[in-house]
Length: 361
Ligand SMILES: [Mg+2]
Image 1 (tube, rainbow, N blue to C red):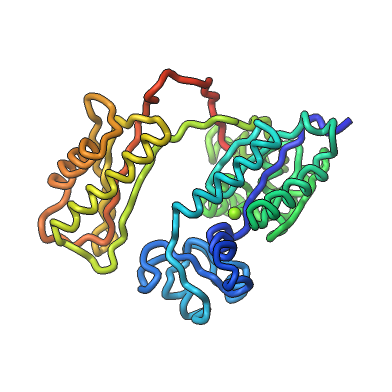
Image 2 (image 1 turned 60 degrees about the vertical axis):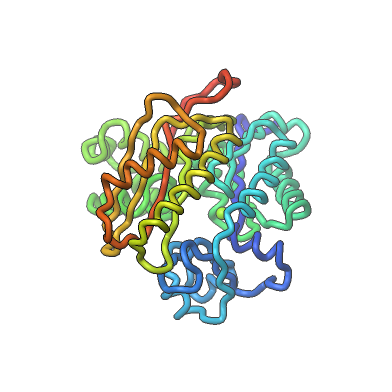
């Protein structure tokens, strides 16, 4: 007999940088920094740093100028989304061949409910086998957490990286989390941690033992309870095997701030084509079209319009985006970033699958 529930959280290590290493083995072991925006300027931000680069203190979201100071010898590469999507879907496919109970949560992360597979092998053994499978089939390393629920499995996969395998036995959920700072608890983040600190709560263990009324007063009745449950390592949320795509977007960060109208309109058309392509692939129609503008003083605005009937056509998306642009952008104003987003989806064919409500976590 295995655990009552056995959940894996599989997280690919330094994903973008690892993919670059796999497709170009000459880079193996070198510090690699994949940059969002412009790799050759000071403007971009670090999307992913390889573990060799992290040793120099480089981490994701860091401005690329700062990364260059810390690690000038690194190989700097621009983000290649298509390539990473390809690797991601290979990994997800591989996991889905093992069980249909896979919930992909981001390009490089998934949960698996392997409760039923425990008849064949124990959870940790299955986790190790999958790790090896992913490595052999795709060249990528993954860290895996094994636990009785999603929250704890997620925390476990981040516990030891890269290529870590962390098992939290049933009954040890709370003690596994106890000493960690609250900011590490999935869903808390820096803001939540700061508010907890104001209450004198610094560790997850302290949060687990805190006065529930105080938490409810501070965070509201629902979230207060939820936070404490999480801190105690309790979570009943299920692995959701089908999740709705909520929005799709494309963005351009400019090498130099631009007010070139023709260029901006070309970019809108190009991005609209990309989005139409992705909508068609996913058999979706979008009803809401939005644009995002970032000015050279970093002020960012978005404007959206909802169409009378949904679309997956590039020209309709770009017409709507262009109209928004005419309202929101004054000619001659330099832009740093321009983006187009589509949302409010309906499916092109009849719904094929039930949607399950998705709970935080
Ligand atoms: Mg990852």
